[in-house]
Length: 243
Image (cartoon, rainbow, N blue to C red; front, side):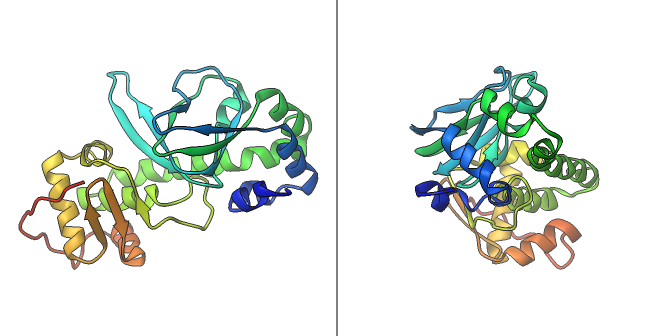
């Protein structure tokens, strides 16, 4: 993929593994947009409108419950693409994607997706790989979260929010912006208990916490905690942490 797109999007394991002819088709067919913070790429329930790739900036993936509760599901960063499922079944989007900072976005319209990827078996196989990877992650989380402790759930959530959504190896080192309420809802604990868990992780040297930002300081140990639980970890006295 020539020019600026190559710099921005070769981080994507999905796009960079496509045949060059398909990469070139994506470059020719996609529309580039600049979105201010707080703008939606699409909302949960919107009709299928194609695939979206993050060129620059970050966006939050938000799922809304029947009761109207918004849950932070994932973060999208440069190189990430979203909207695969709705392109495949042409049903409505199953979550919302909203920019958390100014974003450069590529929009590949649904007719272009059909032409490039869904007109033959090999194109379909290449297109469906990210959605299959995400489905495997969902199944794993359902099984694990039935047995996870609150501290494990928080560690797992922090790992998830700094990891690419479709299984690529490159990970981020920070989450920003993020609120304590968002974390509390996603790990199914109270805001006060989430504050205490964050303070514990910070004292253990796994993360550092500032207003609206969390930095991962020791990813291997955080991953170990997420998988194996808090053996060797002890809770400290609660100290307020501003997130």
